[in-house]
Image (cartoon, rainbow, N blue to C red):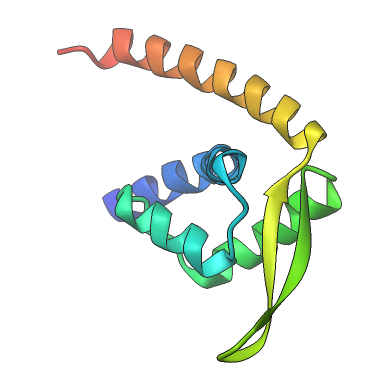
Length: 108
């Protein structure tokens, strides 16, 4: 088993929860999302974020708006929808239960 691969799979599994949580705080540009994830030590590539944002938008969990930029093309800012907030609450409950269960098992 490759440890780096296992870590990457764990990170991918929680990205939806993290992105929805960040967007509940405020609307963000994709590079801002990536930067905040990195600050929290969740390293993710742009190639992972953009398809995930599109999938969340298509599931009606996110919406976006365009904003003109003085330094280039217009920027797409994402925000969470009411449906997204409901899903976020459900994911958070599941996450907290999972963390509690796993902690009981791996508590050395």
